[in-house]
Image: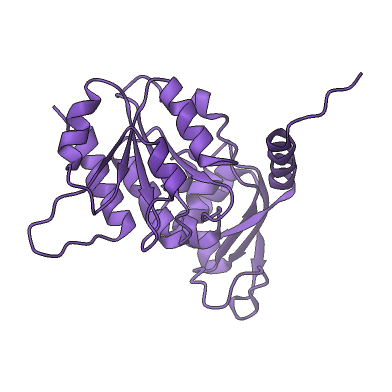
Length: 262
């Protein structure tokens, strides 16, 4: 007698198969250089102008992929119009960082620190957040697979190499993943500008537990289910009568505060 799989298991398996067949184009000298040097990145096609090939010679040799040298006036990679590719484009498969249980606690070199993004869909914001997450030692950035920015060339270019080094996990259900983090010992702090408690207070309440900072999209903020799943809600204090930060700036401030808590 067969047992029917739960719908969330079926959805997760379908998303995994779709991700396995997906490819994306990274562009720009910095993004392409870092991807070529990443042994975990599956690389499929490298398109370069002669000038870019000269600048990336060492990375090309390390990457083990023969480039197509092309005329800059007829750059064949299927990029969005206006993409500043600098004569370099690389077709790759998305990175597979593994499950939250293997990634979120980090490598033990620093207290675990995680960012959860609730429907932050702008690739430039997510790229900037990944860059800050790498600088401040976050072990993972977690976002829902739907309604959040996927790996794209624009995200990679904004991340300035961090996409290759900073775990970015896109999950089926953010609230369920937050519960998993709690079961691993994390204290979940949602950032919401209308709250009375400050981030410093919430970090103090966390004690010596690892922290997961939860940020919502600009405008809508955190969804109700996300708010309910947090252990605490707090705001970043501001000095004037009105205070508002871009989500990527808020992430950087919150990461700095969490990394430097007493």
